[in-house]
Length: 217
Image 1 (tube, rainbow, N blue to C red):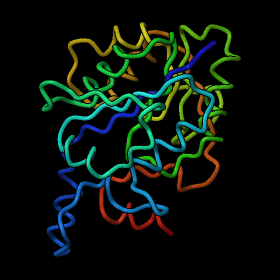
Image 2: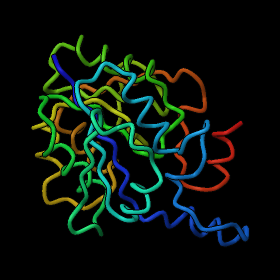
Image 3: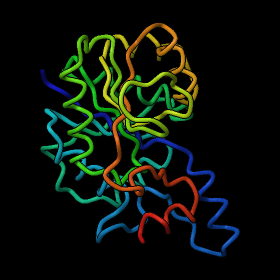
């Protein structure tokens, strides 16, 4: 079973921008803030590439040229970058566009602002997904509350592993955040497995500057 990875990196950066303005900091896209001698996005890409995946797609949109200019050229052979057109779309559309460009039947879906999630945790998600009774009706996801077999999709988001075509059916013509869509999938009888994080930092999404600082501790 081959798995492709999709990293969404197309957002407006609005919450981070407001925080930077309020702190009198230079305005900079969160994905190109420094992290472990690289950028936030590069670290997310590195961790994703260290997992058991066959290919990696990064979906860009807002600030695409700024992001591409900031990251290294080392990914030419390992990562394919695509750009949303139009760029002013929701996360669900970015993910749909990424899924449209992969060759595998299954996808590891990650957001670019998750540099703290390790390749080890991605591999746990992939392993549980592959060993599930019916991967075409399964979502393996980084837990937010419980681990193991879940009884709700409340509060869940990326990263997760899912069947490509089935997920695309829920994303088409949607322009929304992912949690309402995950709840629809759950209500339709899909099995959700919550995967325990390696450490608490893996549960961070870097939306605000304080979260960025916590990720560096």
